Image (cartoon, rainbow over all chains, first blue to last red; front, side):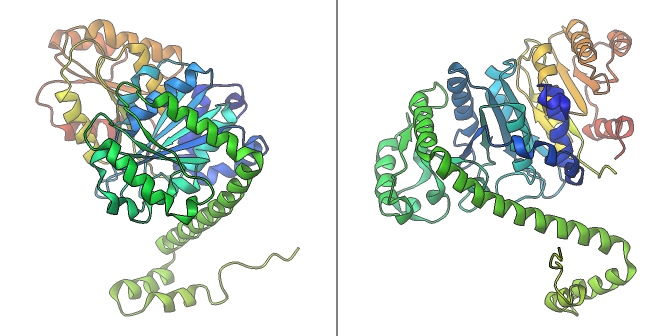
Length: 313
Length: 135
């Protein structure tokens, strides 16, 4: 822990492994860093597979670095639902930064999480924050329309699309098209980029969520960096608009959701542990599995009085 | 108590050859064996490979080299790992490695060399049996 605060990359890497594998061990670490949190500004990059998120991330890192900021990067790729294995390949696009001491890139596998991020992503952001990065960049897996955990995780969300992403009706759909603070049409040298930008703007203007401030729609090229300076400028502008008060408000909401998530996770883990060892519970569960008992009756049998006791002092 | 967790492997290509078919086959094969595989791309310097291994906190590094420079590049990687006190990371290798070089590489910290035609399953088996942490 001390070595993390002294800036040891190895300590940071080992602590990340710990939060990924054994969150129960975090009760020893998190109280020590809690009061040091909140210095890093966290940027989320999300969008469909192959939209160029990693290449764009690499360009954004470059721009932030040239302004002297230190950048932590979390790149999430999917875990196989069949084997539990994963191929983590976002790093390949970020090779320019491998040896830069101001950049730390960590790949994470989703390990069963379905919201586009890994369960431990929030804790890894915290560790990177305490380590002293000015920005933490989080890249989600390639998402469809509803893997939206990123919006509850980062301070702002950049949605990365490509010109082939569909017409105005696609842009009207709920989900991904509503979560961006900034929208980017990457690979903008391809045909259709300009008209897509116009259609997207048209739809965003009608969304009440954006009534007070329209999110910028920007054109970029991740391969040569065109439009990236403007993107980073837009990120900074958002950061400035949010200021301390609105940012804290956003973070307050997120902390509440974060606690609920951890609660769900803890209850399920405890259940799995017990159901694996307790014979009576095993028998009951087999009734549900066999279909002779409905899951709600089972729930009432395990938690006849609800599962959380009110605090007494 | 540490929980059962996936093994993390970095598949890396040091040196200047541009043939990564073999490395990709191994990366995919190990993925299908339930491991988390990081592929870091072509033409990596030993320094970059070690830096990646540190940040990703991997258990295993798999090196692939087809250019003939393995006797120089592989030991440089293991000695850099030692410098960073990361000698507990298992380093294995494959590619065009002549039989006569294997003893030298093993003396220099390469745990095993897998030649042409090795089924990926046996590489996975080797990793599982020789890894430093308890699965």
